[in-house]
Length: 200
Image (cartoon, rainbow, N blue to C red; front, top):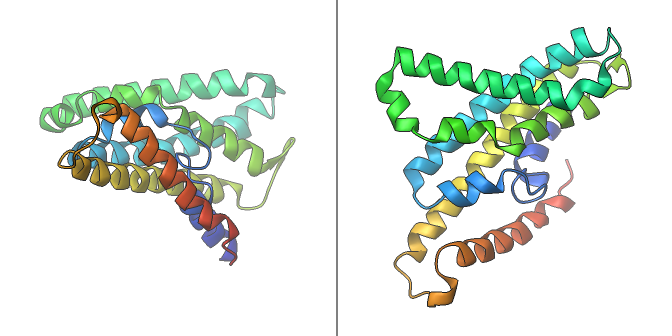
């Protein structure tokens, strides 16, 4: 149970993909102007990260390791994630056009989100020892994918709340929009460093 708790706390707070690993900054800065789109993006990323963790674990375990194709890990993960996101986009468009319109550009943006690839690569490094599958690696991978998505959602929601408040503040012209967003993100990253010393 402690290992599961460590993965959850680690992925959300200690090793947050935005504030510690600096992955997924493009959608983080681009979509965090308002809370509603930020929440939609966060939930979509959480879903895709969880499913990508599941699919890439299966591919790594049952295709890449048995056939000695570990050198194809990165390219196969990229292809799997891109294909999965496209299939999800087609499925949502067919089943619920309203939801598809609500997501808008956010689903294609997830395909290029390096945090999704980052969690898949991290899972293969943490929960496999060369060609040996570690105990509970499947559940650990899925949990880490889901927790990393929650960490991304937390980060983008915090940022969107701050940026909405900044719209009403008197910000110097030279710092408006992207410059002040990077300053705020830097300060939030420093604040999240406080979790690094957290011990269970």
